[in-house]
Length: 233
Length: 117
Image (cartoon, rainbow over all chains, first blue to last red; front, side, top):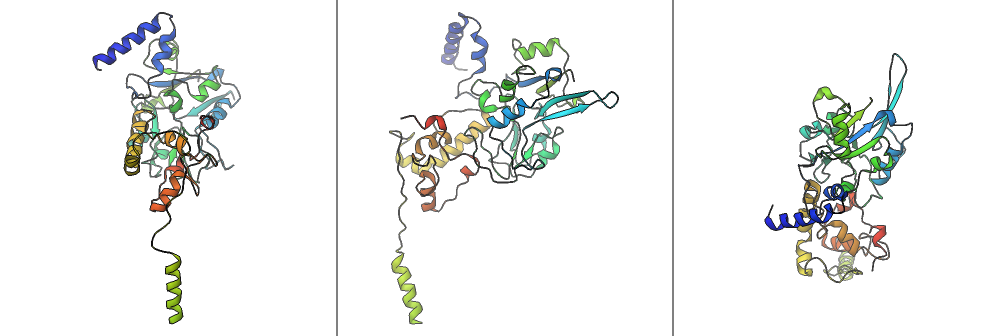
């Protein structure tokens, strides 16, 4: 970091510290010219107990990202879905949202032959559709079934979310919103059960709760160190 | 035989060697992000470079963003850079260059920008 920039940052910090509380917000919204930093690790904490029988997160996600189907559930893209878990012994049913778990060691990145599937510095796992050849190795490798292949031409894309035939896609953790300092659409739609934040930031709610309350990672046996965590599962 | 030759001659006369230059109107903004000559020659390099920086590193500088191109250059009639008089498509058709940007990216100006002067 050059001295001028450091000085500027110092000034900014002083300006914000005075009224209080603003520091966290500012820390999240980086300037558009600044690259994503490895000091951050974005994640989600989902409290399954508070997840009710609705699909607000799914609707919000697909609305935000312009994910529309053709009425063919077997092949339509699915960035997030509601999964139901039923205890065989008691019949107790839980529902929870399931999407890309944004692993620290993502199998989809390991298998990608072109480097299109990649993990950004701040832990968000993405597909670079410019280099994706649609081989679908990643679809096979993902233990969570989080990726979809686009079989048909797409129209009506959102300006921030390009989507097209012949490529693979999945939850981007609403990377375009995160880069603007906003939270993902699903977390915004369901503030009761979903918390988004920086796992590395000790002042964030997600860090605090992961530190003080029990939580689980899906398929923890694979040691992928997922960015999405669940509670009361 | 003479009929065929006459036919060929008519075709040649009807379509002289030069194709018609592309037609488009730039309806917004006073100046582009770089001088016109540079833009004509190098716009693809700028977009290519910016694309990787945005996708891989999350740098969303607006100067060379495709969204920025579309916001200024989309036709006020159709709101698109594609179509017969579309800024991108008319020139690429003339130069016989097939681009696939808009297989994934929207060729339409964002709704919020349409009302901006």
